Image 1 (cartoon, one colour):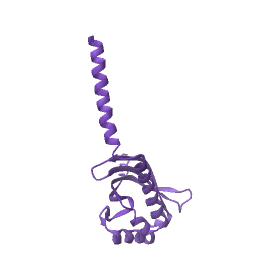
Image 2: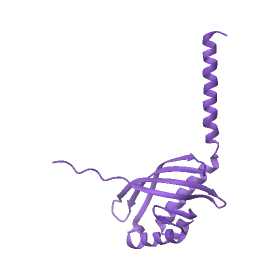
Image 3: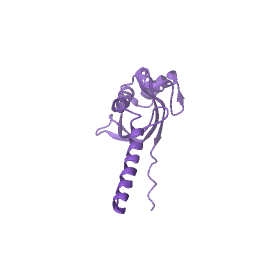
Image 4: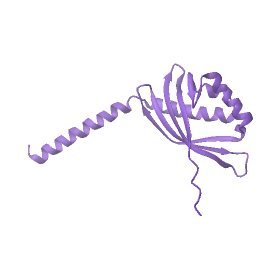
Length: 160
């Protein structure tokens, strides 16, 4: 085998090895897992936007956390407060650019958030940010083990 053929053979072997390593990692989550996780995100948004605290809390594990809140009672209470004191009835959550990666626990995910106030005409953007999530597969399907939301910083004031 000439030098060029050897180099091509080694390059093909390295490419196959690298592809195999990536495929093995990606195989940790099935196509159905990705679909189910996307449905979890939709269920979460519909539940919070409709004010259904029980359904929203059910998207978390029993000991799941949202920022500093932990456990079902705290999560359900958050939705009550959200609706009654923070104008949550007029808010809609929009998520985009969901990135799901396999992890030892199940999956990690990052998704962009835009929160709209539909009580104004036209609807206005209340805030934007990013969720960082730890997801686990339970007997009841995929759930948030932890969810942290970080709002985008407001723009710096214009200098005069």
